[in-house]
Image (tube, rainbow, N blue to C red):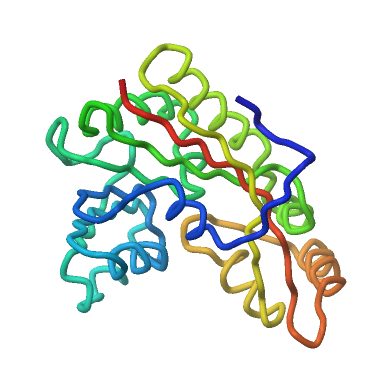
Length: 235
């Protein structure tokens, strides 16, 4: 297993990755850290006979998700990966999209055990995590340096494999396209994200704005976020 690579040749939306790796129809899917439920919607509204349980710890995002009325096959729950309110051996596929590094450091190992508890034997765990590199990361780290938590997330996955909880099926690196129409959208979605508390003084705010503006063109600001996907099988 590798935490990063300098040779990423795949540029695509993440949906292309998980749809290539997984067969989702007729499964009970657990998404841990569903955020604003954009990916949840994509998964739940595609294919057929998909049952989705979507967990989120951010109370603001969860309350908004509860207002969604057109996804009858999705059950939104306020809970974290370290304490999943599901019975043993009831889930076919678990997704963590850029969420493992948000689990408290001292609870990451517990989360990996808890996921194994709810997965059926031989079922799959899909974990995608941002690689600590790239232009977008250079802007983000000015006010929110995630190097430590991303390394901890990788180490938690590797430890779970080394201890025999899971078997690594495939490790994939790809670049995920990102686009912001303007700095206001970046500020609203990133600096003011409800899952984190970022307090920027005026000097740092201006530094972030100037760094972001360097990437802004007539069609907005475009980035390629390097990502790592670890697909694990529960043993």
